[in-house]
Length: 221
Picture 1 (tube, rainbow, N blue to C red):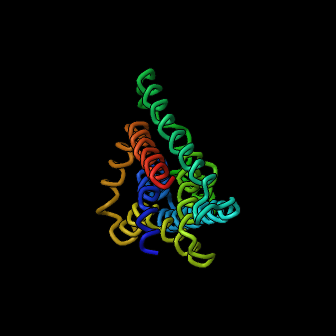
Picture 2 (tube, rainbow, N blue to C red):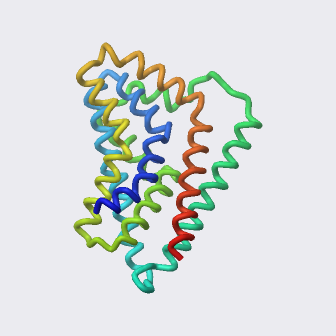
C-alpha cells in the first residue's frame, strides 16, 4: 500500500497544483456562507476525485493481463502521458498569442455568492467534467489497478489519493475556519496570482505528469 501511495503522488500533486479548483475554493470562502460553503465544496471534491480514481481502477482491472501486467494499460498510460505533454505545449502557445486581460471572468463573480448546495455542486463539477482532472484520475486509477491490491484496498488508495490531491484546499478551509481575519487577505492575494498565472501552472503540471507517465510505462514494458 505504501508503494502504491508513493506511485500516486505525482498525480495527486498534479491535481493539488491545479489553479482553477483553488481559485474556486478561495472565492467560495468569501461568500456569505463561506465556512459551510467551503467545507461543502472541498468535501464534494474529495469524494468525486476518489470516485473517478476508483472507477478508472475497476475498469482497468477488466483489461487483459500478461505476467501480472496489462500491456493495454501500459499503452493507455503512454498515450495519456503523450496527450498531456502535447496539451501543455498547446496551452503555452495559445498563451503566447493571447493578450492578458484584467477582467474577472463571469464564473468567478458568481462563486462569490455561492450557497452551500451550489458550492457542493461546484466541487463535483470541477472534478467530474474537467478533462485535466479526469486525465489525472485515469492515471491514478491505472496505477492502482496495476498494483493488484484488491477491491477494498483500491478504495482506500483512491481515497488517500483524493485527500492528498485536495490537501491544499482542505488546509485553506481549515485555516479560514479558525483564523478568518488573518488568512482572508493572503488567500485573496493568492487567488489573484493564480488567476494571472493559471495557464503556465497548468502547462507545467501537465508536462511533468505526462513525462512521468510515459517514462514509468516504458520502464514497465
